[in-house]
Structures are given as C-alpha cells and as structure tokens.
Image (cartoon, rainbow, N blue to C red; front, side, top):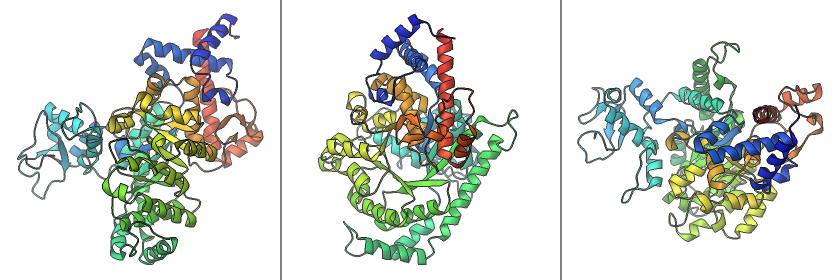
Length: 543
C-alpha cells in the first residue's frame, strides 16, 4: 500500500523538527518507513512516558554492550535465591544487635553450622514479614534511596554488591533472567561482564610480589618477567576452572529455558538471545593482584571464545583505582602487545567534579584509548574535563572508539544528567555511541527505560535510537566481519549482501554463506530484518 501524500508531508515536517539534523542524517536519506517511525516516536513522546515506553519496548535494539551480570539481577531474585540457599539476614550496621525491620540496611550472610547467629534471621522470613522483604529490596538496589549526611547515591549503589554477595552458585539463573528480559525487549545480543574464579591467580600474584621500584610506573621488561613467573607458577591452570564455571552457568540457563526443545514447545524466548562475556578485572586491589587477574583474563579470552574481551571494574574514584590508574594502563599496554587479538573495553571517565580532585578528571579516557588500546569506553562522563578534550573526541571518532552511554547509572552514581551529560558532545564530534544499562537490577531499569530517557532527556529521535541499536552490534566483539562496508556507517552494506533487506526477505546464497561464516554480520542482518518489520508495522498502523 502506498503512503498518502498528506501522511508523507506530515512525516517530513515532524522529521525536520525531531532530530533529522543530527548525526543520524549522515547515515543516509531517511526512507518513508523511517519517517513514519520518526513521527510515531515523536507522537509517543508528546503523549507521555508510558506511551513512549510501550512503543520503544517493541523496537529492535540490537544488543547491549555494558552490563554487569550480578548488577543486572533484580533484588527480588536475590531474595528468592537467598531463601533457597538457606542464607541469613544481618544488619549492615555493625553496632546493631539485631536485624532492623522497616527502615534499616541489611545484608545476606552465610549461616554457621548451628544456623543463623543471634540477631540474624533466616532469609526465608522475608516471605512472612513484608517490612523485612522491603528492607532487602531497598538494601539490594536504589529503590527508595534518599541521600543522607555522608551517604550519597554513589555509596548506596556500590554498597549493594557486598550485601547480596553471599548469593553464589546460581549464575545460570542470572543468565536466564537477563536473557529473558532482553528477549522481551527485542534484543538479540548481550555482552556480559562477569568475574570468573581468580583466587589461585591472586594468591600466586601476592606470593611473587610486585617489581621493586615500580610503584608508579612499570616497564614492559618488568611485566614480562612477572608474566613468565606467573605462568611458570601455574596460572594457566585456573583458565580451565574459569571455562568449567561458565559451562555450568550456561548449562543451568539452558535447562531453565529448555533451550534443547524444538521451537513452538516450552522453549523460552531467552534461548534466542546470544551471549558473550567480558572478563571482569577488579581494579581496586594491589597491583600484583590486578596484574595476575588481568593476565588470567587475557589467557582465558585466548583459550575460550565465549570470553570476547576484558574490562576493569570497581569504583574508578577509589583510592587504589586512582593511585594506580596509570600503572594499570601500562599493564594493559604490555598485555595487548602479547595478546593483540584479545579485545579491550574499559570503564574510563566514570568520575565527576567534586568526586575526585580536578587533576583526576584530566587523563583517564585518553590513557585508556592511547595507552591501553581500549576499543570501547564505558561511561566516559568526564570527557570534557580531559586535557585537550576536543582533540580526544576527534581521536576517538577517527579511531572508531565507541562510548557506552549509561544515562540512569550516571545520574544515580555521579549526579550527572540532562545538559550536564556529555552525550551531546560525543554526538557532535561523531564519536559512535550505544545505549546501555550498566546495572539494570540495582538501578531497577531496563534497556527500554534508557531508550525512553534518551528521547526525553537527551532529545534523541528514532533515527538516533536506530543508530544506537546498530552500533550495539557493529562495535560488539562478536567474531567475524561486519555487514557494513565502512565502520559505523550504516548507508552501504558489503557487496555480497547489498540487496534490500525486508521483513520477509531471505539472503541470497552468497550472502547466506557469508553470514554463516561471520557471526557479527549474521546478527546485523537479523537486526535489519527486525527493524524493517518494526517500521512496516508502524507504517501500517498510521495508514
């Protein structure tokens, strides 16, 4: 059915007013179906947040590149798991003789041989006492949090992880939760940050110690000697442990989701969400531990293709994280020279004025890009405070270093939102970006919420959201070649797959073979088909 002239005129008029002068226009002349989607998103924005959420939940989003597995799980899941594991609830306040009920911070602890200690209660009591249940949800997330003297959103956010940290051995349930939620929002791919076992590597690191005189700067030669000592000491033995741990998690997920069942049975939609993993390294510890764990991460990613890269986590403003930041970037520079095929994404610039001294805002992103060879930057909030910020942005754009944008996380942790957020600066400089959640369980959000926030707070339109969805796959660390001819430019596909992609089209034989050999391109082809279907439905609904 043809679109009427009246509809086309209205669509073009709204499009001009709804962001088509942004970076998205550079991706090519919008099609009539895209213009209809622009109109639909703008109309939903005017109708209110629930209407916008309902529309954007069905929008294909490609995937998510910045998600911590434990932080992505909702508090209600932890409570149920804590009860199954027989954990106890204790007060966070060391001076409290008993678990507070109604307005107190609480945490899970493992019971002793005789059960819960005096002043503690079984986690299962939460199902009989609503105030206790509420305290657990509030303690494990940002729900109901109100800043008080000496405790801000940053403190509450990072404190949650220790509080539910006793929940162990249920990683498959966590994978099921995040994959099922992703499927419900029309996502295809998750690149999940996860910390596999590393105690053996850390113990060996402390045994060997750190090179003398390398407290502030370390050479490749010193790191090479330390690497050799760690490998001779048996560090590689833990690589197999990490793969086995992931095997167990994925098997548990597959059993929960019935992924071996045929389509149309009880098989969960979550089975169709592809997952890969980034090896999390804990940056807030002594350098000998950080290097040992980082080396283990590079070794594991080299041996197990499910681990597609590494990332550093923990508060970037922590004492050791700040003191050793340059040292840690030197570690990555060296290890990249030894393992050039292992991808690197880094939390960098997750700091704000007042949280750290002014000098602490001036070099983190630049060193991550120039010294550590980061291919993606997570957060990047302080970019305009960096030395020669304009030059840094230009460099990121030219090198195609993408930034992972976490709007809600940046708000609740750093107090950065609206016009204070650097997303507009990244877009103006043509730095590729993709929206993500960071820790959707702790923040009690989902990826659709971030798309809504990007529209309402940052002024993004449909074409900008579409670009973010495409970039989530284009800048992923999925193996294989891209569907697109130029990195991050979504105007021309490679010649093999240049034919138009519709909601019902099938790839030509040569394209099908290419997609079978290149996982990234295959996911991108599927996204284009999902986007075509989404836009066709919006067009039909408006005729």
